[in-house]
Image (cartoon, rainbow, N blue to C red):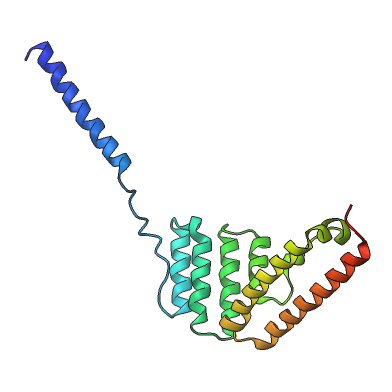
Length: 185
């Protein structure tokens, strides 16, 4: 084999390899089949599958798994579902998926009557009043989450009505407080 033929063959092989690499780059990435969100009506089974998946490479999809679990639980509302979500969030904290604060706030956002949207160590007049409409939008979204958690998942009408009443009271108090604070400067 002469030198010219050897370089040409090597060049053709290199061109073929490059074409293959470029084709692979342009193709669709493989689907993440290991992170299939749970299906079916059984919350305990869905939580078990979620725990397994979240421990074996799907931790980046925690929010998606949590939302799916909420949706599954709506199919069988009962008071015990609160405990199931509490245990799941404690587990998520122990596995390092959520901090203690994140786990507590997530639970309270859906299953507590108090509003995590209002928790903070700040001055109402200087920090909350200038953002009053934004604070109320956040509380409104949280009330919808409480409706899902307390009513649709836990069948806890009494707690939901308390949370709804607290929302209305907070709105009135915030309006009155901001009016008393005077115009923002």
